[in-house]
Image 1: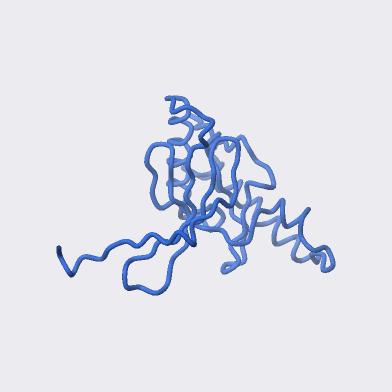
Image 2: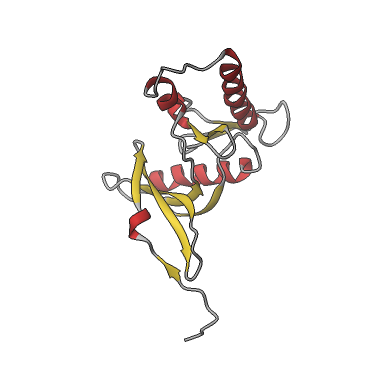
Amino acid sequence: ANPEKKEMIFNWETLRRIAGGYWRDVWKVANVPAGIPTAELVALKTIRYMHALQQRNFDRHRRDAVAMERLTASPFIMNIYASCGNSGFFEYADGGSLEESIWESDQSTPWTSEEKLIVAYQVSSGIAEVHNAIMEGVPAIAHTDISLGQFVYLSNEGVFRLNDFNRCRFIG
């Protein structure tokens, strides 16, 4: 054994299903190299067990990975770290979805007009980034599944980002 080689330690305490859509489950996973006390959290998306491993499903998740890779430089789109088949590692959003923020949060302190405007700017900027992914003014990707649940919050950056492109269409 090579003593220099860092082993990966799997921390079962941090593996938790945190969300799920129709096609995939989302898991919170800690990426913990041996000997390093902190863990970077990532989101692992896996195909749901109820779906067969078919070419159609594989293509759906391939489109998700390609779109996310093309858009990962945007501050309004979630980052992708890796993908393989029907699974992928993505940036972890710790603040829940926009849908949860609007309908399920404590309404004792409603958003101010300024906060609403900031969120509206972030949401519209994410959609604009998708539509202008290749060249400004030339639509190249249609998300086709826009909803409040597709925007997730990164509390350390204070921004809602668009994610989940498995129903997207590439426009020629």
